[in-house]
Length: 149
Image 1 (cartoon, one colour):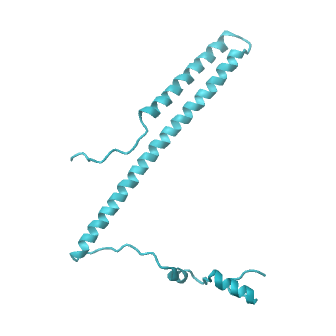
Image 2: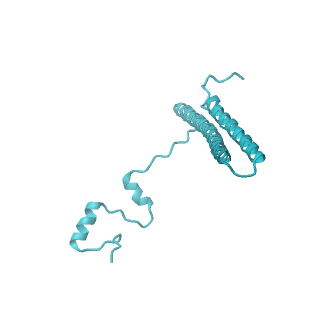
Image 3: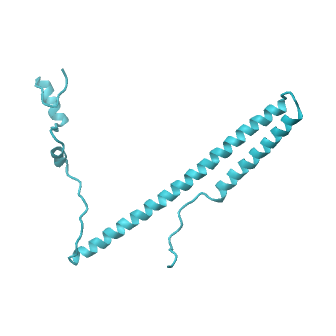
């Protein structure tokens, strides 16, 4: 089967992976530095606090960038599937419209009901315009849809 000439959907690639890997390398470096400082001395020093802060920060940044890249990849895949589905639907509709002239079976698309038909679809609900509602309130009459007591 021949390859499609369609452009490939966007997928987070080298740039996103570079930043995730860079943050991961910095996180590993800070973890190693913190481990070395903890094993060398018995008391907490300012360097250990700095190494711990760097460790926490870079680890969180690496995790967040990795999660963001994974979410972008999933979103790009879903978007590509939706686009493919829309193309298939439009192609099928086009083909069905072409077959309609030839007398083939065509399933019509549903048509949205007009404004007057919406009220008929609701069971037991009257539709009163704002103008009519204001006139009935001024006259003191209460209609079926008026809920004030």
